[in-house]
Length: 146
Image (tube, rainbow, N blue to C red; front, side, top):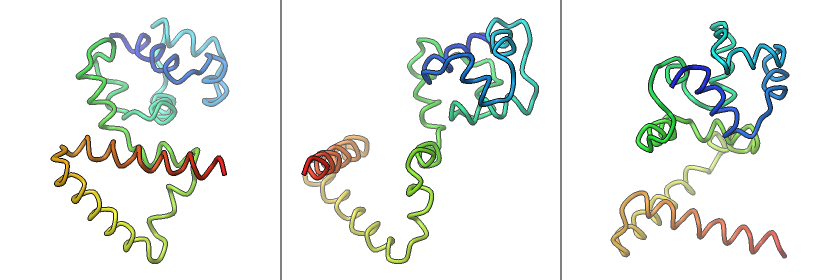
């Protein structure tokens, strides 16, 4: 997959228009179009901004590895993403809670809960995280509707 194809695919997956990307990077829509059609390549600083915009590593963006339908490649990219940083743009608490006094006690309690759930139901790590995340989300949803 060429850099242009990769940029087009990432933009579409992010739900952005060429104009949105252009505005965020301080370039014209035509520039974004030229990148996506492999007529030109972004300057290094713009490539770095693109990697930040799409929450992918700079190395991934400029490498020749495919993104397309190769599920293994997609999973590798997902594993590279710093989700706390990515989500903290929308939810600023994620960038600050770790330094709060007393938060470590909750971290320890959740770690114990994680281990207990994993052992009691014989879940693997991923299943344990997904089940606990879903339980927390259901609690959030219930609290939100009250």
